Image 1 (tube, rainbow, N blue to C red):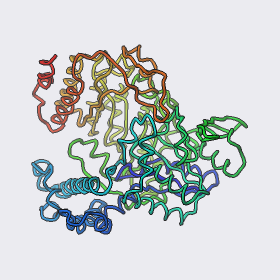
Image 2: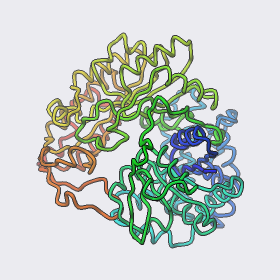
Image 3: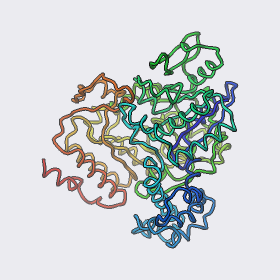
Image 4: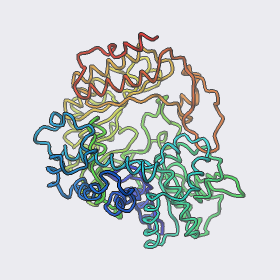
Length: 595
């Protein structure tokens, strides 16, 4: 028996999809598997009357009111008690601190009819306030959708993480370990496998591994997921294996199966696949293709992800008023599903194209995708899908939409795209008819010169045309943007914001987000920085623990931090319909003056 665990914390509104795929595959091979989202179980445990009364300091302001209201608010956010909305909005139910932040102009935002949405927003502020108190008085590493992220992001060595793990668990960690122990006693697994998609899940996974190795030494502990795939390609730190027996890379199905038959004694260490272990005090990496055993599984042959066993009734819907796409991300329980493996383009200079999950494109048949959607909707009772692809393949997406309509099915879905010429008016109407409600895509630097330099394969005008057709079909359009790419001039950044302003003004983009360019070791720009006029002092030198982002130098004659602040403030105004009649250059007066 294998127990598949998503450790705290990923999302509050929906399960992370890794364990659902692994469970289905392991069971397809004839083995037993169970799964749990330890994060949402822990949220349920600590956002409760008993936990607050047991762990908040005596005399803490509003602690009694939090204890009285918390379980009612959680029921409301789970959709079980809509009648509470009026009391939340009325203003005398939640603690004062929750109603004091960001509540100006709520009538403008929600109107007089949007009571349920306004109540969800206020309840979200309430949870954020409560989380801040937990961070202040119980566990400084706690956040609602991540845990100890600051310790694990770009951690060159293991020292600080190990120091934290050497301390006694906090009350929140003890609650997590108690939940884990219940699963171990009930399921009695031979192996526990943790998926660690983000830095904000790593410390909790290691704490769980520490507990298992102390109290259940007979259980094999393994770990994989997005964090390992990006940060641990050059892992040489043996102390990690005090908390875990094996770490696997890339798609986990076959490495996990090899570990299972290795535990049965049918193969030795040398026949493991994409797996780290510790032998004779040193880290050993094995990637065997011996005995004719397969190393990859064709996407079309994978079983439908299995959601059974996940606590679907515990997920909550929160509200984000600052960004429409972020609100979509956090509200509603979406079934996460990968349409195709990898990116069909995989040429962008900033992207980790050398990694398997991006560089190896493998698409199933359209009928297979729709079969999976039907089966998952039956399992979960939910017809909404978030496709988690790097970019939805246009031809496959067309065929999927045609298959949905042919079967006369009703789904709602959204996902990531590339703004290609494929998105004609007729194609976008087909998407909308089949249930597409939103897309996100990278306009990135929003400058034709820079788009050519990074190998994006689209132009600004092409993006505008695609966005226009999508929005005309009633599909929400979100765009990702970046600043600070090597050789980018201030005038190009101003021009990029001007392009974004025009798209908002025309109503063809509804949501946007800027991030600062980060050079990674797995990207073309990280592997050939000189091609992009960047300099890396430590190229080819690897840390013992994490290796992903690379420090680099480029010749910028302006303040990147100040520019980043301007881009975010201006775009926030655009999303609220403000400043659209103001040329983008007006936002940069101070930066231009200080050059």
